[in-house]
Image (cartoon, rainbow, N blue to C red; front, side, top):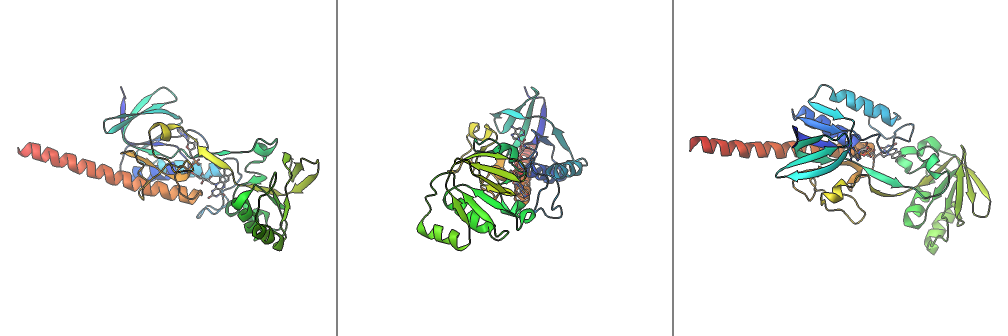
Length: 309
Ligand SMILES: Cc1cc2nc3c(=O)[nH]c(=O)nc-3n(C[C@H](O)[C@H](O)[C@H](O)COP(=O)(O)OP(=O)(O)OC[C@H]3O[C@@H](n4cnc5c(N)ncnc54)[C@H](O)[C@@H]3O)c2cc1C
């Protein structure tokens, strides 16, 4: 039996969950925010393109957000949600510390996991010398030696885009590129060298990239756009409808396909940036409060009706 009743349980204390907690706390809702660990960008030294906080370390952003929550009725627990049971219109959430909590609404803000290639040194460089997004990190590497790892339209696009920041861009496809003649022409016109050999190892700063032939290429940063999966199995277990690429489908207000369950941040089809995640937390927070207000009005109406009867 769940001991505590919250208005909302938020699973995940990244930018999306933290900002939703702020909106809901300020709406005088009893909120439980489950903090299962560091945000997705924890490996990087600074988050960029963040309104008024450009260049702040991700854990500084998190600390500031948690401080903001202190004045509101938000309980923050360092725990993971391990299971969720739907009980009538409520949700019982099992925590990793064994406790069971009940809430009237549920917000999933548990983010995504980046799937990195199994190349020695790749994971060590992630967020430092191996980067995923020019808008997050290219400014810091302008006119430096850059490489892109990947194939297909996304890698082609990434290489061309990075030419805005540097004249020295090499595209490592790790095997036959499969680029069309037009794509090869685009790359050649902008002076992007294409290397089709497998990459066998990454090491050090600057980054030494070893190719299958034994040849080594030294760059200041390697850009790679990873495949991703949901960080938590809960959305799938709860039956939330997923998009073709595994994001949780939501409507314009963050409501998933399951009544009473909302989702925000990277785990939805939203663009994957701190500001977008935080903004979608606001949207979902307001939608949840609106749904609760509606539910309470209906309940009050029923009570008035009963009292008058
Ligand atoms: C290396 C790197 C650098 C980046 N740099 C930038 C940048 O400079 N600027 C920018 O705008 N964006 C950047 N991003 C993207 C940014 O990190 C994400 O868009 C943002 O963190 C998404 O926020 P979120 O709240 O949706 O998810 P996350 O930040 O992933 O947070 C989800 C949280 O949920 C928690 N969680 C998961 N499962 C559970 C569970 N079962 N119970 C409890 N908690 C759970 C996780 O521990 C995590 O804390 C970067 C990403 C990476 C990988």
